[in-house]
Amino acid sequence: MALKFDTRYPSIDDLRTRAQKKIPKFAFEYLDGGCNEDVNLIRNTSELREVQLKPNYLRQHHGSSLKTKLFGIDYDAPFGIAPVGLQGLMWPNSPEILAKAAFEHNIPFILSTVTTTSIERASELTEGKAWFQLYHPAEDRLRDDIIKRAEAAECPVLVILCDVPTFGFRPRDIRNGLAMPPKMTLNNILQVLGKPHWAMQTLKYGQPNFETLKPYMPKGLDLKQLGKFMDQTFSGRLNEEKIKPIRDMWKGKLVLKGVASEYDTEEAIRLGLDGIIVSNHGGRQLDAGQSTIKPLSTIAEKYGDQIEVMMDSGVRSGPDVARAMASGAKFTFMGRSFMYGVSALGKKGGNHTISLLKTELQQVMEQLCCEKTSDFPNHLIK
Ligand SMILES: Cc1cc2nc3c(=O)[nH]c(=O)nc-3n(C[C@H](O)[C@H](O)[C@H](O)COP(=O)(O)O)c2cc1C
Image (cartoon, rainbow, N blue to C red):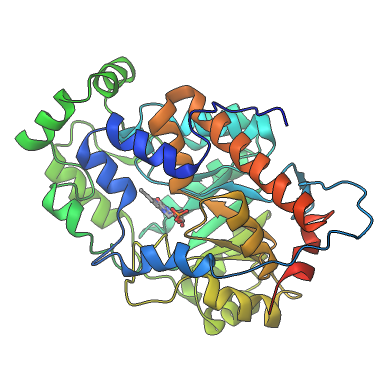
């Protein structure tokens, strides 16, 4: 097997270890941590890995293909890059690196409202293939303007979020003074000095900014004023009243992310959404919640023929993607895995991580004798 990635890092865990060495502690902890005591963060991966799959070694095999159709679009693999805020803080230029790699590998890249490149730039890098995740603006005027920009950028899918009625309670970020936005304390500055490559890259690309939001932000805000701007600009809790006008305006596919219950799935169907991402934000919002694999199986079985059911949170390998798909997900997303890749390997990190996951998933499919990604559920041991 010809391996198309750097063989020094053949797992997401290797990338995580290297990322930890390369970037300042406050940035690594922002990326790596969950909320409260990390219970749900840990459960996401450990309970996903309890899913077991059955191979059929003697069955005729005509080759396995990762190609997967979603919303009428043919993708080269059944996984994509989840929206992550403040990406440029973990590694300068990282949303651009990931958007480009996603385009080259023909997988979806979802741009966060609060990341460090703009809708227009992500669209340019992906020739209009990037999806956009909208944090719900408090003002209708701002909401309409951002949606119009996403439409003008030919974004095929708009993702709205239901799992951020409040910001997550994350002790590490509180300790590091890394609320939204980051604060440069003396301790944080000392951490930067210990990571010269990161510091040089940050100098080269400049301080990360919320590029999509720049046109709406008064110039020259200090950090405290910026925090206030964010609080005033976004209203966290989503409801029917907020979803309906978006559904009316947005002609493309509309996806609700952060679903963890049958109730929210039924609401999404009733309000005319095209898909849901069963997700707990990577264990960053509700530590007392379930791991995503638990509601995924029930939701996919009950509602999978009425709405596209996708999943994220805890996926760290090709076998994990296979486990999620066998449990009913039509498509999976990963946040940290890709950010570990870029934080570890810089501009090579996007291609490396996608190639690694593709190689692992191809191996699982051939091992199972699974020819199409839609056949994964046939291999689930119930
Ligand atoms: C550092 C970080 C920042 C995130 N920022 C956002 C965001 O701005 N918008 C969003 O919809 N989800 C955000 N998420 C959640 C991811 O989209 C995704 O649900 C989560 O990372 C999946 O879990 P995983 O990291 O275990 O793959 C963030 C996740 C992380 C780790």
